[in-house]
Image 1 (cartoon, helix red, strand yellow):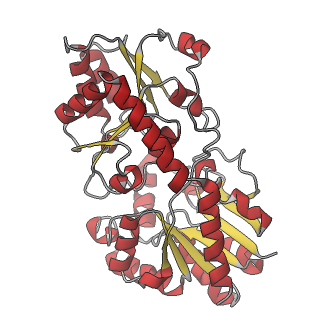
Image 2 (cartoon, rainbow, N blue to C red):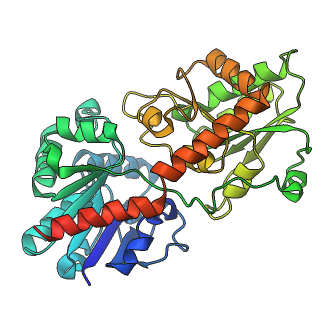
Length: 396
């Protein structure tokens, strides 16, 4: 049985790895993460190994020194450098890393030079080509160019999460025949329509007849959370809407204190439920008590929505989705959701109002969303596509 190392540094997580778990029938899989990993890993159903990474040490430096050192690490492409990773890859057949600018992807191609049988596969979410040029003040462009070119040259296959990511790779010089577009799947048995949990509604102080809007994501400007608050305030003051509406916001991030301040200034504290975090194994419960899911992402100078995993979870849960024309969102949602202009709270307000006032439209969109997920984002289908990529590189 061939040995596969799935390398994700701090970003190893259940929601991506559920697409690899079915592959344990064919491959001996080990996931590699760091001791300072960002996501829950206890529920991943294959071997996990933690390695130390350079940020563990820089995070212990005094604040005034830490910023300088982290900037240097970023400048020279050493963020998430994982100690002993190349040694771990000596007995592997496939090293499956992520992104063409991560230090551990470069470590994987270096390990390939020392182990002729090792094949390198990269998953790529990034959908902005030549990103290092766009943040050139932070990066050593020439150094990053050389590293990126070496990663591209020595990678056997690329898995682009979206067609937009594929296009970005091709622009950067990746041969099109090496790129396979395979999205991320979601557990369609856990994320599915269920009747509202009356006990959970009571715990959150939501009445059974109230309509619930849900946002799940990092509390950062680029997720459009401010525009959602403005639209929500306008909805509550709209005399044509005769329903009580609650908004649940799930997430944390650097903008949290500012969001709380805006909520207070808009006098929305009694209508909004703020939840810092929910285990990935429990998040489906919040989808099931909600009526509309909203992700109003806003593209920035150096980021556009790369996929929107929460969109697929909501769609699988048969929720109507309202989101924006940002990055790869349109190809994820297709015609199974409502797309609005990024950063336009009036457009967002109008589209939410349209769904609030039509239960039939909500039901129709929810059914269409569920059908799209079953066809495109079923992890069994996704894992089989990944298996074919693995088999193709092993045959070379």
